[in-house]
Amino acid sequence: QVQLQESGPGLVKPSETLSLTCAVSGYSISSDHYWGWIRQTPGKGLEWIGSIYHSASTYYNPSLKSRVTISVDTSKNQFSLNLGSVTAADTAVYYCVADIANCWYYYWGQGTLVTVSS
Amino acid sequence: EIVLTQSPGTLSLSPGERATLSCRASQTVSSSYLAWYQQKPGQAPRLLIYAASSRAIGIPDRFSGSGSGTDFTLTISRLEPEDFAVYYCQYYVSSLLTFGPGTTVDIK
Image (cartoon, rainbow over all chains, first blue to last red; front, side, top):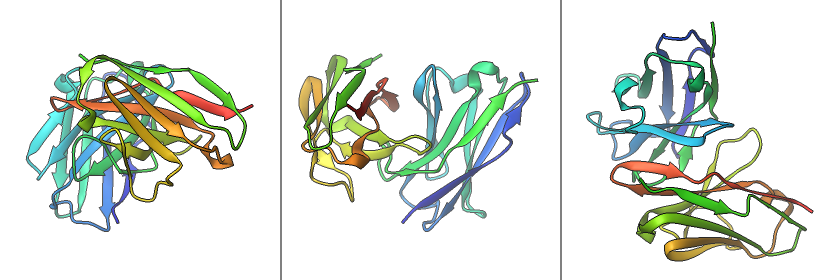
């Protein structure tokens, strides 16, 4: 049973980089799963940010691709999200997700609220 | 880009009633990549249905999915008190996932 837990700053200043980590338990991050990030805002609803597979293949939402990096730390069994040049529009609840397919996600973290404000 | 539209926006029903939720795609899509989620306040979404009609692990059989082409349906045969929530459809194509805006099922 995969368990996911997000962590990171709850407040980020505009133009800075939002960095979140997702700790994975119950499963090896080196396994055949896709590890990803989804965010949710009242205005735009659920938005897929991107995912990573086998620590190397990355897939990003074209609307965010220029600002997003997803990476894996196998030594800590966790993966991370970096979103650069943030604005107030990036204020959202961020979820880390996982599944054996990249078409939908069975495993979700509890979510973490990130506010972009000076 | 495929856009998903869900209707109705809100469905007001009583426990024991049947709920029928619609998800319409802006163009013909493969049912193999259509999923449904349930979200309750303060919780992460939960995968209910994948590949249009397959129930995820642990999902009760009162939940069923159907459809093809551009029109997909999530049916809850008899609403239980814990089923009042927001429901989202989601589609995958070309390494991109998109979600519908959601349908709220609330208590009448």
